[in-house]
Image (cartoon, rainbow over all chains, first blue to last red; front, side, top):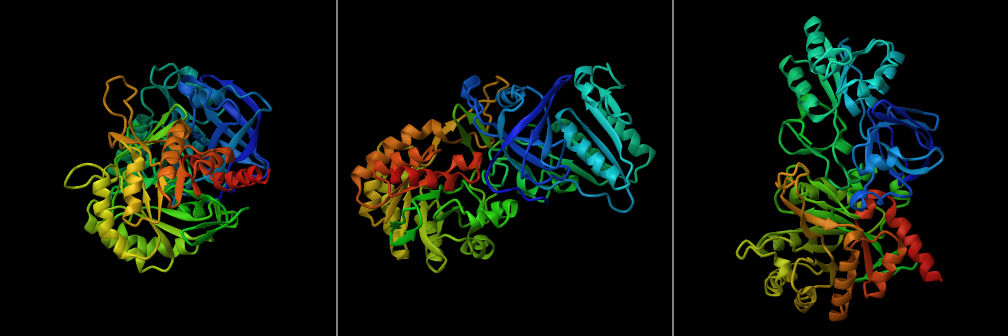
Length: 264
Length: 290
């Protein structure tokens, strides 16, 4: 786990680009350490944070990074609420607050298992970063992404080997990405599954992997106030009882460790 | 920075943390020794410890409000035995004095907790969380002066260490409760705790969003309420007051000090900026130097 510098620090938006339904942000983070795949940052705009609908946003927002090295970090977001709305309107050169990299990222597959990376929607970024790290380490990951429609799937167009599923059938397989995963596991179950995506998708993947006794690492998302273990707000129920904090115990947790993925 | 004497404990500056708003053990794992080199508070207040282990409330536990938030965490903790065995040795190694916060639903439970803390050299002061329903009346112990006085009469003889009563703002007259705490031997009072609040599910069904149904509101949205209550309590009692509620900058801390507080606690702002405590202490120092 890469440790974060203490306190929030100022980054600067280097670029912002709209790709289909998503915004891709490149942030200059001088002095920040390189993140590991699956780690996340807490982000907030320095100005105009709290100037939106209902005087929100107030708290910083958690985002997994899509990549990061040499003082640059990449993020992807969809403008769906007051926090993402403000961040999507950041201008090049504008400052933003960062805390991170935070949490525990993905771990290498064991026993020679092949990595299958299955996710969707705003869960794509950590899987993209992990996929690149796996390739650098000589592994050959299978990538499967699910999206609502073609506008959301556009972000995956640059990856030539990815399997795509869309809810409306406008791109790739007409149906759920979990169906693609089931087919892959049927073909060769000697795999480790890595997943990040909406709660319903993650829960379906958790169940599928448990039933087939396939190890799975799930990168969980949760509303959180702090990102460093202070607020105890971002909990997920554990299979042995009690709760884990997504921010400091995760965000990547073994499918066997959790009782279920909360539906929010 | 200006040192402060708080109940006989010398603190480097007046900024501490509100109980349950900073996990120094988790933060040390996340940020490493940089946390200890610039520790953001002049004393560390633990989260609330209860006799038994508590898992806390089912999620969701958070809701963002205009300029603030509601938490419905449910006081998860390892219980007294777990705290003493696992957490206390780590908290004792922090570079600042330790205040342990405890909560019980009966006077007997609180006595057991306070007596156990009394035996620990590393614990310099004990804060009583009295925002807990009295098992007989169903009212929060800290909402009713008579109920609080009864608990204090049982608890006070259990320790010679400073006892701080954390007052709840969810009562008719907080100054009356503070006076009852002082009359029964409290060494200090701290306020305000969070304001009781709730939120509905955004799906429009009207069902509660929070797993615990209700929670406590904090952040700058409640700062003016905190200022009014700290002012009222400081005017009523002669023991030290720890003021808190929505403090984000040195000026907000200065206002609570002018209202009569001896220390100021930072809570929600630490969620937004892990180093907020030391930043606010520095800002306060610059204001005082003017």
